[in-house]
Length: 382
Image: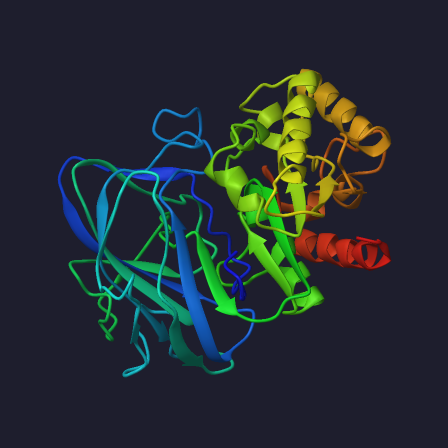
């Protein structure tokens, strides 16, 4: 991203939904984030006012849909106490500004940076990001909707600097800047472009059990890890070459983990999915601002497909393993880690399922995938 700033968290900041309401509102959103490093930090926030990926069949939010007009009334960073209950440590809040101003009007599809802000986050404490947003009736700002992987809270009114526990826990609305950065020298900047399996959906809240987070821990903070996994996302969302793919182009290494939703709700054929993956890789490689970027293509994780979808899954993965799209620098076989033994390899191992009916990988799977990836990654010449 911007010069000296790398990603400060492994939490996904991708968007797959947009606020749509009948009346105007002013509401504060507060999120607790475990950082890659603690101590004295120089932070910066970047935002893209657009939906990254399609939710469900796209009735409300589609990939590359621009956000509307809305206003940041105020924004603060602070330090968590020993509980994630909506409160912050008194006196720890630091104001976030935008070109020196405390508020900012955001226009459709706008991309913008905050000013830098300094804060001391002690070990064992979270960064708490709070911002108050005024939104008009109709569609306004993009956010992520899913089972929350971190503690997030909301309160009516302008309460971004409020210290007490006056907030209500959010159920499925994560409202964050698109990039949470901190100043640090990095060896590599790895972007993980994927769906809910990359995001970590269905793993424990505040547990950081999903494989992207565990990979970040294993590689250490000299590797910036930007997770833009997005629930219900498809390769064809990225293949629009819109805001989501633009984010992925910021990496020196881009890991692509897409295909499950293309085969499922997208009902894409083998040829269509492989064409989209090829297009994504080509666009990443052609980015004039990132010469020498390397692309790691993952096989499509098993998702208990049957019949025609199983056939597509098998054909796509065989192609990725043996004749991957041009521009692919390496292939990581995530399916091999998660799958049942043949001939049931299209099914995820039951011990890896988030519950008996849901094939989203759980925290145990997160460890298995991360361990396998880290061993594989260290052997690669990337």
